Image 1 (cartoon, rainbow, N blue to C red):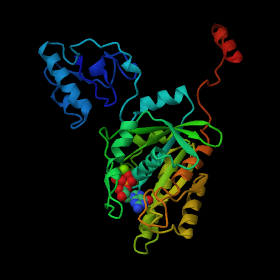
Image 2: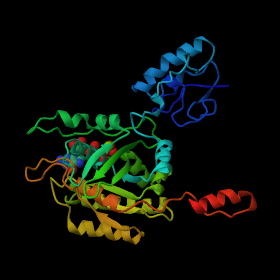
Image 3: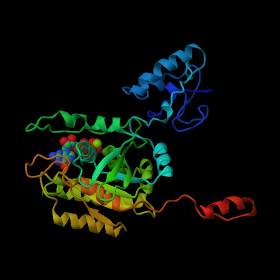
Image 4: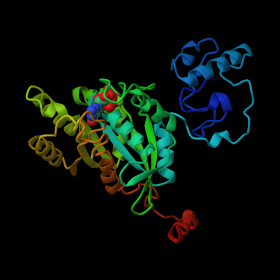
Length: 354
Ligand SMILES: Nc1nc2c(ncn2[C@@H]2O[C@H](COP(=O)(O)OP(=O)(O)OP(=O)(O)O)[C@@H](O)[C@H]2O)c(=O)[nH]1
Ligand SMILES: [Mg+2]
């Protein structure tokens, strides 16, 4: 048995022979075990992605030389390894960032069309135009991913907005979340904040509500804040509000269940405020529901875009980020207290001094 090409879309192993996660190539789980003649499905795993296009010729050439899945060229040592992944980050990369520096991991949930992607696009566009109140853009490891989700929003004409500015989110790996990274500088004190923001399909929240399918949302346990996005228009519509309210409450209950003991701050984020204000009674109901499950609840209404001349596009988005960052990360879990024994005396005293 050999290992085939890497299936992690962020990894450049096939091109550089270096695992982006630092795994030994022979043992990396992202490279499936294959028999020499049964690797056809590997290259087709992510149709349409550039990574997949790059991998195919390498795999084919390797097949011809009898060394299945191994690159035929040696990796150039040009420092490229340290470049960040161009698309979204996987869980392993997010973990690596969080171990290296304080970062604010946000959980973003909500049904399809709630406005999850739109909020991220709105923040990115405001930052790129230097009009994100209270913050400026410092860096991003996932610029290409931001550009991809923002593309359609750059081409619509004023006065003729399309129905959909962002497209329905799909993931190349439907079991693993893809994260966007933003580094912000806060104007007030020049402090730098790293934020990790998943752009998930609404189906993940629907599956959590309908089937309690929670495995792929496990990462929410490590988040400091959860944004629960809801389409604000539904809560101001007599025919739709009952169902919208029921599903929002069920989502809160499911989240509480999935999170076990941990309780990140819950921000309820009604979108489409340019169309209609979120009814106070609905806000109170959701707040109360969140509290009954032990959440500290906050409400942050936004208009990621705006069809209303009296409301600026991106209304409330900077405030959402600002309030998220004041929540502070949960206490870090590394350097846990362990029993000392005579054998680890040096390490123990190092920790005391550090
Ligand atoms: N005017 C206005 N339009 C919005 C707002 N939020 C979302 N939209 C529109 O609603 C569409 C759907 O929003 P998305 O952000 O793509 O929805 P989503 O939650 O990411 O949905 P999935 O990816 O399918 O889960 C967007 O393309 C926008 O056109 C808002 O606050 N104001
Ligand atoms: Mg989306």
